[in-house]
Every structure is written in structure tokens, then in C-alpha cells.
Image 1: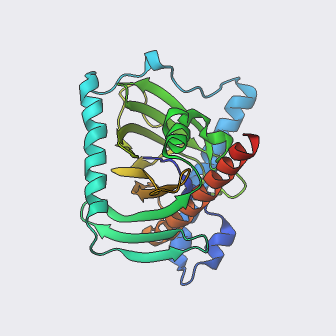
Image 2: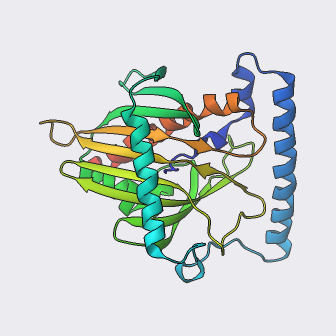
Length: 281
């Protein structure tokens, strides 16, 4: 869903590639094709913006129409994405530890039929459930202010009190040498007692097809679970299932090494944001 969130593994750089053990010439070749493709589009876009006065603007809410206009359809799609993601998390068999951090963050992975390799991050954050819900869902359009991996997130449509459709663009950063990705997603939230569930998946919009110069990546069924940590006021258990297809020509083994790193980077930026908020009072 968060795509967010993440988004991301799109920040793979040449130094990272050089550090990957067993990187084969064929892998370098396909990445080179992607670089050439996206750099060519980048030059075209730069020329258009510089000399033609053309700017990219995300469509307004009135411009965005789902393939099926029924709001109930979009809500059900968000709910179904959350249901599928929760089923993946509830199946405790087959998870393999990928990364263990000094702060206690743990990332595990497993291969799921129909979804490929998915990643589960578990962490404890110094924030209440409501505070995290506010940052990650209510004020999702502000995420670029504290997560440098994101250029922008735009809420295109509210299709219910708990469901939104968003467009997200990954940032053009020094480390993002393979070009930007964009994401079109339906996001659904659900509150139950002392927990919040945020789920979502990719969606198609008739009036917003893939944009020239971007690779349209897709979130599979994905979710974040935020739970109050027992009697410890102001702390929450943060569980994030990341299920993403970045598209393009990148080999899967490179993506599978980059995605957990993207989760750790996101969590680090989120902690910095929470610390800054606490300092400001």
C-alpha cells in the first residue's frame, strides 16, 4: 500500500550494484537498458519543460474516474486487498529472516503463490496508534516532507470515509539512478479497538494511464498494522507487509535485495519525523 511508502527500491545506485555479490554481466546489461530508456525520456521531458513550457500536473479529483464509477467497487477493492494481505501475515509458516537491526527491527520474507516474494517488517515505534494513523493515512499527502524517497503523494479521490485513491511519484534523488516510478493505488483503513489497519493495492483509472517518462510500478495486496504496545503508553508495534512489483527490466534478485533496504530506510525516516514532532511538542 504505502507504497509507499516506500517506494523505495527505486533508489538503487551504482555503488549498491557494485556491492552485490555474484552480480552477473547479464544483470548489468538489462539494467543498462533500463537506464538508457529512462535517461532518454528524461532528456525529452527536460527539453519539453525548459523550452515548451510544459509541466506535469496530477489530475484534480474531478478529472479522475475509476474504470468502474461505482464507489462501492473501489471500497470493496481496498477491503479485499487488506483481507488478502492479512491472510499472508496470518500464515506463520515459511517466513525467513532477512535482516535484524540493532534497534530490534526485523524483516522476514517468504514466497507466496500468486504474489512472489513478500517482506514483513516488525518494529516498535515511539508513537501512539493515533499519531501513526495521522501521519500515514490522514496526512499522507505530507509524506514527502519527511521521506526523501517520495516526490509527491496526491489524494485523487475520497471514495468513502475510510478509502482513498492516491497517485505517488518516487523522488529524483542522487541515488535514484534508474529513474522514477509512479504508483496508482486504492488505500483502505480500518480501526479496531487499540489497533489500526492500513491496506491497499494498485488500481487502474481510465483518465490516468501510465505517464511518459515513468515506469508504473504496482503494489500488490499490502498492509500496515499499528497496535498499541500493552501498557506502554505512547509506543506502538508496527508491522508492514510489503508486496510490490517495480516493473521495468530489473532482475528479481536485485529487487529482492533492495526492497527490505527500502523498508529500513522508510522506518528510519519515520522515526526521525516522530522525534522531530516530539521535540516541537
